[in-house]
Amino acid sequence: MRKAVVVAAVTTAAMAAAVAVLWSRWKQESERQWRKTRRILRKFARDCATPVSKLWLVADALVSDMNEALTSQETTTLNMPISYVASLPSGDEEGLYYGLNLRGSNFLILRARLRGKNESISELHREEVSIPSNVMGGTSQELFDYIALELAKFISEHEVTTDDTPDRQKALGFIVSYPVDQAAASSGAAIKWRSFSVTDTVECAGKALASNFNRALEKHGVNLRVLQLQVEDAIGHLAGGRYYNRDTVAAITLGMATTAAYVEPTQAVPEYQSSSNKSSEMVISMDWGNFNSCHLPITEFDTFLDAESSNPGSRIFEKLTSGMYLGEIVRRVLLKMAQETALFGEDVPPKLRTPYLLRSPDMAAMHQDTSEDHEVVHEKLMEIFRITNSTPLAREVVAEVCDIVAERGARLAGAGIVGITKKLGRIENKRSAVTVEGGLYEHYRVFRNYMHSSVWEMLGNELSDNVVIEHSHGGSGAGAIFLAASQTNEPNS
Image 1: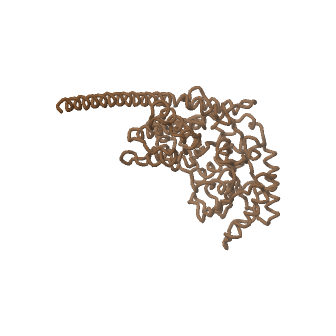
Image 2 (image 1 turned 180 degrees about the vertical axis):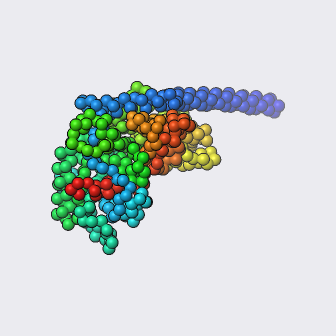
Image 3 (image 1 turned 135 degrees about the horizontal axis):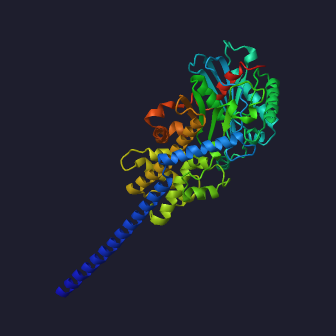
């Protein structure tokens, strides 16, 4: 009996020792994996770093490319077509105006009243209309007929008894949201609106399309007409910004895609110095999403994202700053950690391998999670990637990755804003307002704060007040209203 007890004791001790060894090995492996996770995170943070010195290099490179695009007769990577918008609002416009925002698979109809003296837009009505697949696959004239018919219905349903806008001033503001190839592909939208893009439509083609659209409006009894058909949304936001603030010189769109527009003195555009154009300024549609520079902080994850995209080598700035790509970069970093450091357990979550599954609104929710143990991160990981076993430390890493990606994108956007104002020579002696629109700016608070702080850091206390960033007025599509107002006093209106 005593011998059995001794044997049992020895066996128990041996098992305890074995468990202790296994525990020690597991703990060592866990610590090793955690150290590797932190190494990947630190390297990613270093590669994404945007100190003020680098931001100025980016801003100066943008200025250089802008100058080249305006003066060169050859096509440059930074496409900067003149918008042919003859005028911007003065802030004194009054009356009832209509606008149209043509987007990927739908369009937005708007009606609003302006009361002049920079007063707020009022009586705003908007309606989103889906475009049937047969119309999307048809001719431009079929599309115009469909839009005109829906516009007639909208006007009929929102009749007003006191429309003090003279008949001769019935201009329809028209803006086209810039096409995003990757977004269209991921959402299943086949149409990309290339025929309406300011980058692909020359002035005469734009006038021909406007003429066709006006015939469709007349055919369906719509007492409106459009003067400009090749206007993209950033120009609409610029018009809205100018209505409220005459110091507005640029507008930025920061959403799924990113574009910019700004006001350039006519003398800075050699092509128009000897033309009959009497205006002292011209509106430039600036496709800054295609900007690229050796000074941009590009990581291995960005390189692979670009190589696997539908447009390798193109739209590099957009792939660093827009809502379409921010979540995808985060996903790629987390996938590497899951594969190499078992961040979410020994098995890599299958859904973590799915491209573009993480959207920027979900990224923002995880990034801005202030709950104990990052409960929002936990919920989003379960909802999006079916990750049910995340630890508090893993969730903290997820939040840190989101922070690194958002900070880099926001600060680069801020450098772009500084670059535009520097190109105009306004930083040191003139006050400039820049209006910003888009879900990324409007709904992603930390992103917005990072962008504002980057501009302040670059300009310092003495000059930071000279660049004012404002949120656009009226929301999505409202720029079309302000464009309509700006056309009322043009010749032949």
